[in-house]
Image 1 (cartoon, rainbow, N blue to C red):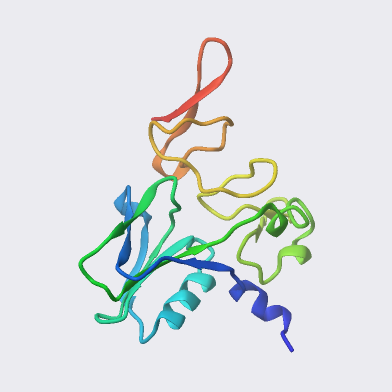
Image 2: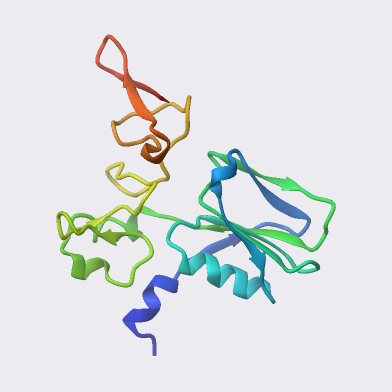
Length: 172
């Protein structure tokens, strides 16, 4: 029997073939680089960290890396190590729609949304934004954006509006 406390650890993952690792586009995307005794423990570390969207694990070196990234701002690449594998958290609108903007009780112990102390409602976690159906990661410099909060605010990026009043791209 599963208890509500296990909800934050619940993630569906997609695994690459062996011989691959994740190459982030930006260094700031690496959030954890340690050793883990197994791929299962590395994937559990990712599931427990709401910022983690991708991890890679090498069973020879026991290297476990967690990334606040996805395939829009990084790539799964072949590596010389045949014991390296990449895991991606699978996201869908159903993980978000029933909770977003609901009272904080709806998102307790949940990795996909956090309780805002300002509004006392479930909101997207840091470095992500609500796009109307889910919480994708905020975008980096020069990425095309379609709403004001789509760009990495922690890097002082804003979604620039052109002379026609249209959102264009993330810029300082």
